[in-house]
Amino acid sequence: MEFEIVFDQEEDGRWIAEIESLPGVLAYGSTRHEAQSKVEALALRVIADRIESEQSVLGQVRFAAA
Image (cartoon, rainbow, N blue to C red; front, top):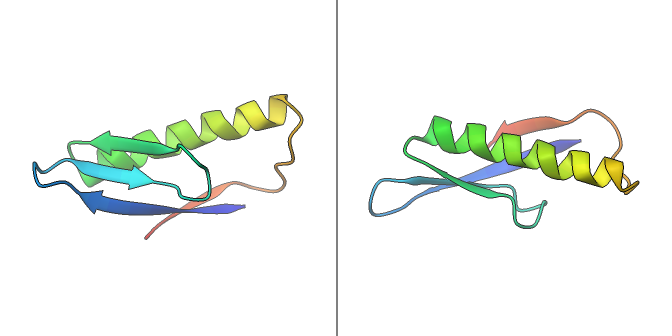
């Protein structure tokens, strides 16, 4: 399973990273790298919660920066 990370930069310079296929998985960072790290960590928590609640999550998990 691969998740695409979409980036945007705010007018104040902050970066936003979002994984649109996982609703609510959005993170801010002062750099693009920081936003990416935070959104990947949040996505892993969401996926772990789904596994614990026995929702379907199959295969390896990979991230691709857009």
